[in-house]
Image (cartoon, rainbow, N blue to C red):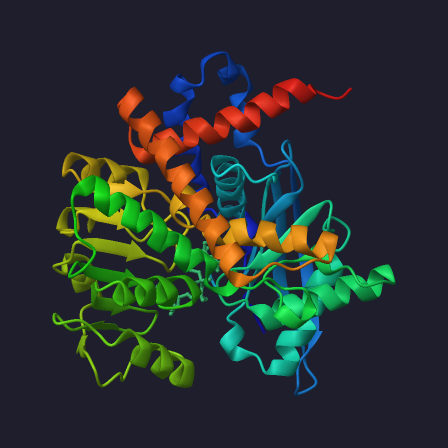
Length: 428
Ligand SMILES: NC(=O)c1ccc[n+]([C@@H]2O[C@H](COP(=O)([O-])OP(=O)(O)OC[C@H]3O[C@@H](n4cnc5c(N)ncnc54)[C@H](O)[C@@H]3O)[C@@H](O)[C@H]2O)c1
């Protein structure tokens, strides 16, 4: 009998994936770093990468093994911070890139964290609730040697939510012998979670979207919006835009694309997704069978809020939007960036556009440490202020240096990270 062995994702020979996009972004910013360029290699080398085997007993008594990761890209400015993704396409390259974008993002909005990210290569839809819980707990135990409230603080990402964070917090706390609520953020409110955290990333996308619209002379009222990904980030951003009078004309998720030129009823669509797990079958819109059509939809603002490497040289030329708000991490390849720049499309990069989530995660962590909780209004106000300030600072620098918002955001962030590195010096 011949057994076909699967090659672990970290040994994949198929290019370097999203990590390659990230390295190219760093190369593009290096000429603007002055004397700090001498430290730039720091940005290209993750500080610490842990690959773990996550075995569980399945409901039918068999044993299943999953690949798990936690990458701490940089901790020069503070503990690692970044989400945990459960997805069948998770690879080491992807987690490395996502952890690095967290370093850049946290520095760009000036929250006192380094960058980290984690993930398990699994389609969680194939697991029962019991199996999902056992996998989450075993993964938490395995990465428990490097995470902690002062070391590295995970949070939700694709296919992980408040329940997963509650299990992670409980597992870590059980191993420590006392409740450590600050070890993860994005927890349920009853366990030290923060008001406004669930909506924070989508809200941040909306806030910077309004700022960008002002710069482009676009009225949000009546503007046409297309959203890829209708999960936490995409659905909240869509709801806030539609509440502000915009028309959400197209939504794509992992199953299908739905369109309605007069605008979809976002609240009804959210209820449908809650019930069925997808936008497919929604009666208030028309399904488009060719997925590629999504990119050519007539819209003013495009919000990629699903996965990385979605906007590529193949589809960038078709995009009709004036503004792209990167809700997802790494949705645009560097080559596509150039095509869109040529076309005059304004891209608000991920490291600014989706920073609302980590900003309120920071508020949650601070609230947990002081055991004193803020009102939702206070949180939304502070979030809005930080997002606007970050956008304005990056906008001004982009004008001054005549570079894209992405390069400007990377200049701000890399300068902060590398200054911290230089001041701390190398040990020994
Ligand atoms: N949750 C957060 O706070 C947060 C913060 C910052 C950035 N992000 C980023 O935002 C993105 C979405 O995260 P989320 O938390 O909303 O995840 P989620 O799991 O809540 O939703 C993901 C959505 O993407 C859709 N999707 C998956 N594969 C797709 C595909 N191939 N084509 C089209 N749609 C697809 C899913 O159907 C779902 O609607 C990710 O890139 C994530 O890293 C999330």
